[in-house]
Length: 253
Image (cartoon, rainbow, N blue to C red; front, top):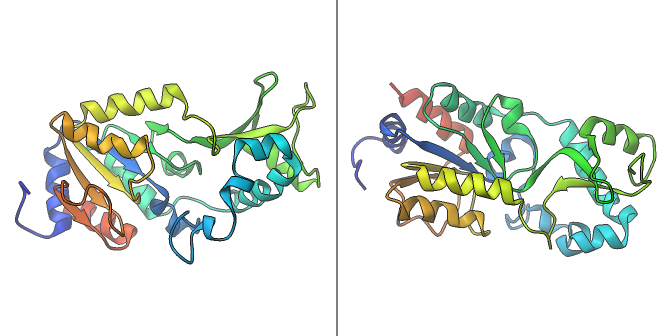
């Protein structure tokens, strides 16, 4: 590691202060303190309770929209009551101070934007909108929630009377080309990528830190559990994500 002295938080603060083109990459772990379960933690993850191939696959949506929305309606209800936590606030503060250029997130929960982050690339989409596959029409989250709350099992496009689909990447779908192009460009230009709350195992997003390394940049990690980049990172903070980011902010000049 190039920065060998001080606490891990101080090392990361120095990296951020010295970087010119830092970018943040976040996964489900940053939203856990808000009350959103991650996907793969043994005994706790969302996919421990349901089979994603049955409830979150594009084929499941097209085969039985009512069954799909039985699951996704519960997610909408949960996410409507959840707000950003101090970890999201800390990332927004880093951008406000000019220390990071933007956020690439695998999360669909809108919490980075709610916390005040301005440049947010949502590579897995967002629940902000639902879309009609027939006409391309869009309906906002609040309106969809109102439809579901009224007792309608599947929200439909008012024009096509076709089931609305959350504007998120389901299993069996490709990631949005524009978002991945923007994320790839940021990663290639970054002299520091700070990865927060991600196991960095799901591709193609998991390849972005490697791209930063290949272009001569550095990576730093704030995440619990192992990642494929543990040996290549400048520093890794493996404690509570809120506490670790608070410590980094406190260590900044």
